[in-house]
Image (tube, rainbow, N blue to C red; front, side):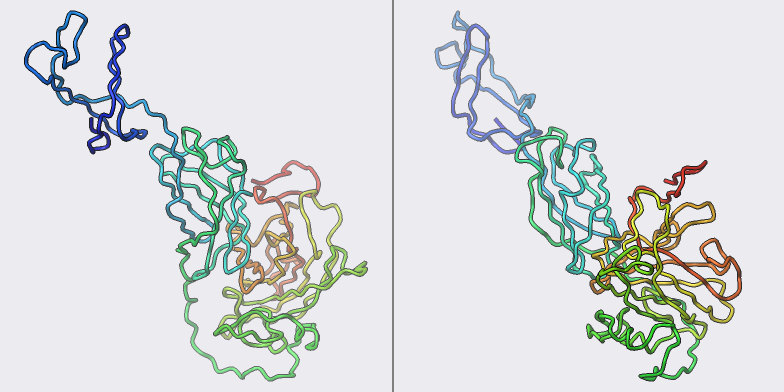
Amino acid sequence: MVSGGIANTVTGVAVNAAAKTVTLTLGTPVDYGQSVTVAYTDPTAGNDANAIQDIQGNDAASLGVTTVTNNTLDTTPPVVSTATVNGNQLVLSYTEATTLDAVNTAPVGAFAVTAGGFANAVTGLAVNAAAKTVTLTLAFVVGAGQTVTVAYTDPTGGNDTNAVQDAAGNDAASFAARPVTNLTPADPDPTPVPPVPTPNPVPGVPDNDGVPNAIEDLTPGIPGPGGTTTPGDGNGDGVRDSEQPGVASTGFVLSPTGQSNPGSAPPTFTTLVASSTNGKVGSGNDNARITSLMQKDAPTGLPAGLQMPIGLVSFTVELGAGKTGENFSLYVDPALGVNGYWKQDSHGQWVNLASEPYGGKMVMEGGRVRLDFHIEDGGQFDADGKADGIITDPGAPGHMALSIVGLAPDVGSHPFWF
């Protein structure tokens, strides 16, 4: 006997005369999918008792190498072999003799992902049965160079349809947090701008963003260049926000009615960056200037699925010369549980500007959620509707089901966008 290309010793022979079968017991069990062959050599030329024979004593003829149908059941579970991530897509590759089950799979809550030491929720899951991969969609884009881990817990002890499994129904085993290879590319450098001499920020000089310096300087800093944390530096560029006209930080009240009825709600700091490239003010001479930043109440009549834990972020920005729009970054506490920067479009739909369809994204940076978005002067997301060099914005760091791109406050002719 040969199984999987290796000799497999016969350790026992049993004959069922009535069924006309000979059963061989093998030294090594045959695995599912292995190729198996058998051969038989009659020990002597004549008929004798030392051979397979019929009741009349006729020896069975020798048998050349013959393929054996392998009916061994697949009882081996799939095993994760590699894990990679690019942006917000984390791919688990499995070792499996057949295919994975693309219909019955685990809930997203069975996976735990961290990026840069912080939890990054799994919001979607897709199985490619033939490729033997499970792709997880993450709430936040993973930054280049961040340390990423993934863990999986089989929801139940036995084989069932509520788990990652192969086509035979064998559940993949749970695994503890394991490293993930981070393939996220570094953001490309912005187009170089001819250097223009600018004076260094002068400590104590107001930046005229409408927020008192004493408030901005209370902002918890995040690690900046070289890993150094500067108090009052909410965007991690190594400079206090109170010294920059394009960066403003202030304390909001952790309440959707923080403007009219804050009550005893605790504070939470928010940082806004204008002329932003990945959360840092660009190096050009046409940068925008923040002129106000404040908290406003969440509007009434919101869709049931939309939550605004700190109400609206209201700001005004003066654009630089020749600019027709601007890129912004908003830093908020991940404990708010937000998954986008939500605004109403010209049709009254609530849409997420910090998403790919609108040229934005969400990133975890320095233990903060960074919401990147773009607003055109006089466009549908500029509240004054005028191309006047000033962007007026009330928008909401909020949470809405990620499967829904937009949702209107009242059911009309176009209540949902998918």
